[in-house]
Image (tube, rainbow, N blue to C red; front, side, top):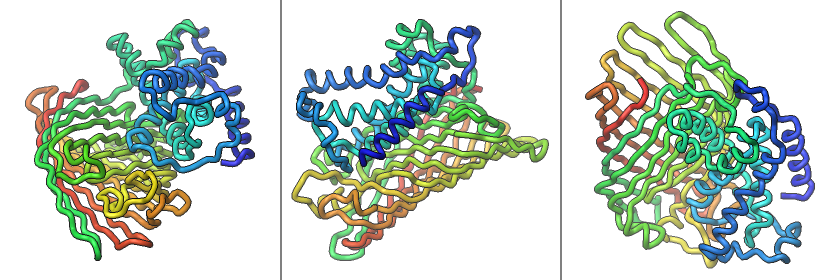
Length: 469
């Protein structure tokens, strides 16, 4: 990242901070005021806590920053890093959400808070690591921090209305900002349309077939146990708003189970894991009143997804356009969505690293950074007696671009489909039992290695508790 570009982004960030306006309501006019000291100090507070932990408790080598490192920060060159997947696409977006929520708690709007997340990430990259500043961290910490931060900010307000400590768990920056501003975050509650928790068991089988030279690998994962949360905030089909993420959907979960015996590292050969997040938030929406029995919203959207598991992984930050449509019949309701996105930055596993067919001479990670496009399709049919059929498809066209490639990696195209189909029946007003099928396919067309086709199918059962009607 050039010095000129950095200076321009810093100037733009300061502009947004100066003119940010609160977007949520409260009974007290005093609570509307923007607290600039709190918002700006939120740039540094999370970094100090996280940096101190890594420096003195975990004693991480990259956290042993010296005065010489800090005073010569401007000499550092920006790179595409090769950090652990969990660090880059879970911890960094969450860290960005802390910067973001600190500013939102101080009444900055979404745009101003995103600027704070950008500044917080800049401070971290330059002053809290001995590693070279990371281009991908800046993007995921800032934009991933916006997506995660705005959802957690809104859910923390809902949570506080249910049980006060829950608001602090979802938004831990309140431990600092409630004290400095003298009030809790401004907001409304009662916006959750649907909230559910489920536990599941499943098994899956997959294979990967290179076109030539390398052997086909078959993998069986005989048993997984996991949990998952699903939230629908705001009505997706009657939404009309200029406020980002005043309507969003969030699915987050994880599980452990029996591994296949294959893996990038020895730990993966001994432990099965699956952690995933699929989310979308409307950035701007307009409601279309087409007829009495239909509801339709269209607008701009941000899809933020990741899935990290033994057989495959991918992530995406993808802004785009969306239509969300619902048809109300006499005894059922049918709803569908279509998102068409530009994949600003994503990742996917590089098979020849992931299964150790190729090993660079220097440290590496088993994935490539990508750009491209994403399409999301959702279809749901809700019947009068409570049963639900739900189908979701995420399709990606990802390009492994050249300037991020690690040694011995290859550019190329990755065409990914990830689909889920569920059918569930109510056993009471809140409890549902269901079956789930998942299908994953990927066709990788590389420049320097044989093309690869990957396939995985999984099936299982789940029990779900719905906390809303």
